Length: 267
Image: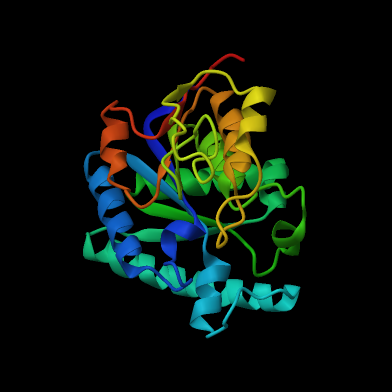
């Protein structure tokens, strides 16, 4: 089976959902829900992969900083996941759309029977016009919080795995910068944005550097890994700024936005 042309996976990170002091950014939730609802109204099937449970939970619990112990991280994830879904339900509901929650562990992807059940669930929801909202199950899965070689890495890889699973035509990863630059724009203000990338090689990984923002855990390197996985299945991957979710309108209309990693089917 080929890719489903009107199916889009959108990944939003912690930095896009929280403000500069680490609290929930309500305007960001509202704006994201508006744009995704509008895209769905155009006839697209939308899946949202959302990070932010630990950061939002920490804020809700009144913690002054992100917790360091495993049990407090998992407690914050449990609180934050509830808060995130409450906000998504509220804002998507205002724009006339029903959402569903799907929490994943690595085993759900690796075991064939679970994988098939998961695919069937996604398809049933999308066929019913419902927008699935996906996150890693941090409140019970300690490996995804702590491991250096995490399968999902701040949900960048999770979004790619979901894209492949549901045979999406496009994956859009919202980051805290405008896309992939020829050098780190934080240290090289004159660095140019690369608009289109055909091949992901070692030289590109060297450009990617280390981790990203202080509120999230994913950097450009994890986005490259996600893009490599998805593009090998023919999926177009766009990395762009999560502060401007309306870039989705441009992406579905074929207008350049951020950095496009072109899908390479048959590799």
